Length: 484
Length: 67
Image 1 (cartoon, each protein chain N blue to C red):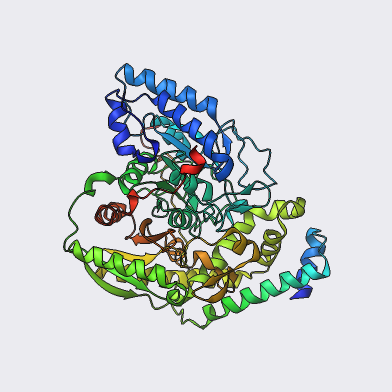
Image 2 (cartoon, one colour; image 1 turned 90 degrees about the vertical axis):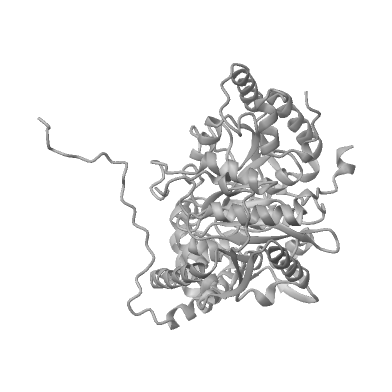
């Protein structure tokens, strides 16, 4: 039996050991469950543990592998699932009071595909109420803590998933991203977070009302880019149950991992968020650009003429689309929303249809502008979040200090922490957040690598090359005290 | 804007206080200011981005060869 240090495990390595029967899926699941028992009280990453189901799945994986029926690199791999994806027989709250007792009798397609790949699901992770927020403070189920500094938020809305991956409480997690909800917590927790192309992963089984219909994506959080590619391979592809899932063929995503990036071009996105990005994040991006150059890539600036209208388009689109799912609850259980969310939902009811349609026309212009930019470069590079993780106290107050300036977390442009990620929800382009540095106080900083539609292979190739060269993925959160 | 919020309050039965009505009205006004520049863009000939999917899963119905 291979000695196991969970913090160092990647799916790619673990899968090899499991396949060779050097590592038992049951033992692996037990080790993760023990670690969750030790660390979850302080981190609050998991809302619901599915211990019995997990051990049953792990035993089944072990039996199959012993009989020579190895399903692939996710066989026996421990996962967590954000609590807005339906899981048969498991409470699925979407972080809301309204669905506190909802137990679906079906699985989301992503969950089905993971099960078919032999994955072991350890439990459901904490999230923002109805996935509408970016810090991880939930009025009904408590606050999730950032493993790099417990006084800080993990980001959101897939905060529990990011913490579970960063703190080695699972090897990968499935999250959702309607405005940055995978990439934002991935950045603040120092892990990899992928929002694939719109339609690439079926959203069937996502809790309605936890993302705009045309802006929401299911995606993946892992420790490394290669692991992310392995998971996407399992969950991507057309789903007859999701009318908006894409028919585009699913390539072998790991094919370009490790391939040279020399000669590829990266466009550094400049735009409306330039003034919002703090010096340490800007500095990390500058260093990342140097790393790309050292890999032989060319860097040039790209600008999108109507980029400044992204917050308006995102707000008009996602709020209007969300209303169609929330109408029933607003009529029957309005006071079961937290007050802040109720107020913004009611304000959402006041968005005129003319605004929604005009936003979709401007959206087309913006998509075309990105298309033109991606004819000149292979990928676009952008910060993921303008700041490192704010403190829980700052988020409760609603503002943070940013290079000596007081900044509201919610302003006319929407959610401050999502300003850099929303362009890719509006356009549906694939975007991965990878760690690109750390602040002086030891907080992770993330960077987005964005590709053309269905160009996840290129995104993985570039992000992986950067990851290996920069080496930030090797850093682990300081959890030694909690582990004792 | 406050009147619009009051109308919604009556229709949906939220039971909002005057303070809440004011807060929501302010949010809606801020949103309107955010949306205003959308109407300043020249959108002549630009159609809205609306993805209309065909349903490829429905089996193609051909009467040929059927009894």
